[in-house]
Length: 96
Image (tube, rainbow, N blue to C red; front, side, top):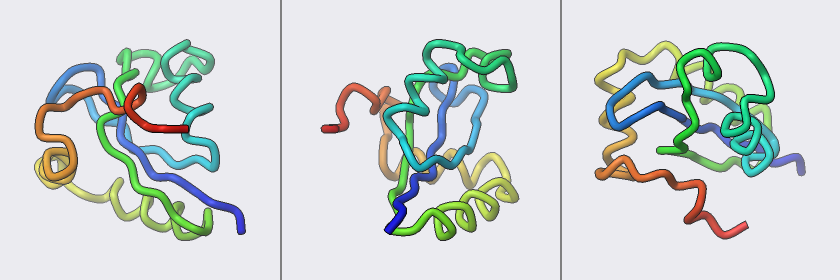
């Protein structure tokens, strides 16, 4: 099995939302936090992990990511708030 993660990062509570997919959540969030790639998340300072889902297979995670990217902003906010009503940075709380 090749696991996958779908995640949302933001710059502040209810700020800019970025939906991404990865096979290495810890490594990918580290990259966001350290500005490894100069793209959307770097430009908007999206470093706070506020939501995630794990999948047994990366193709399932990719499918979910593509669906979430079509959602409107209010739906994504509701999704985050169901898991993380305070918009805490979950990166430090996940047990790797």
